[in-house]
Amino acid sequence: MKIGVLALQGDFIEHEHMLARLGAEPIEVRLPRDLEGLDGLIMPGGESTTFGKLAKQFGLVEPLRAFAQSGRPMWGTCAGLIFLAKDVGRNQVTLGLMDVKVKRNAFGRQIDSFTCDLNIPDLADGPFPGVFIRAPIIESVGQTVQVLCTLDDGTIVAARQDNLLATSFHPELTHDSRMHALFLRACKRGSLSCEL
Ligand code: GLN
Image: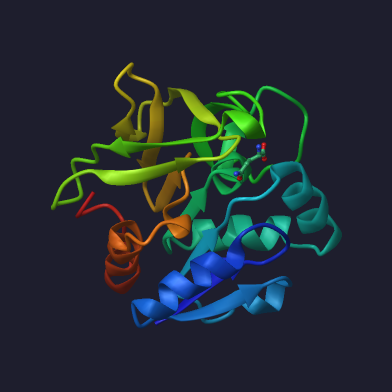
């Protein structure tokens, strides 16, 4: 299975390592033609304003929207989640695909980064290690968005809408491959919806 990883900036290599470990073929996406023949696409952590600027410069914004419209699974982690969102509370280029309102840098600055155990009902075998680095939160979701994970205080940190998956945290920076495995199963089925 060929899984694209948006490779404009950020921690795309870590996603590639995780995908390769699980037997998928990671493909770096920098130009529209790199999207051909992919079974799914991951947008990594990094700096969402930089994603926006470079995606615009490389003519990727519309092709990425078309990729999502094709129904193939698409997953954004951290900055990738921001890049997927419809509302980020400020003027920056995003794909505007997922009906969520996001607050960037919601836990503070880089120094306020943290890890914590997450309870993700869709994952068996215990808590998932949540790595939050200058992470966003999802402040509110539209009617067709399913919340997948919240912190103890109710803060939303993972959600799904149709073929779109979004996490505030970074599974690619852990040794736990369960989220990637779940995404790959969805790519194989061609849909995120049945399992999640
Ligand atoms: N703070 C970054 C942003 O706003 C996201 C950080 C990350 O991806 N770890 O885009």
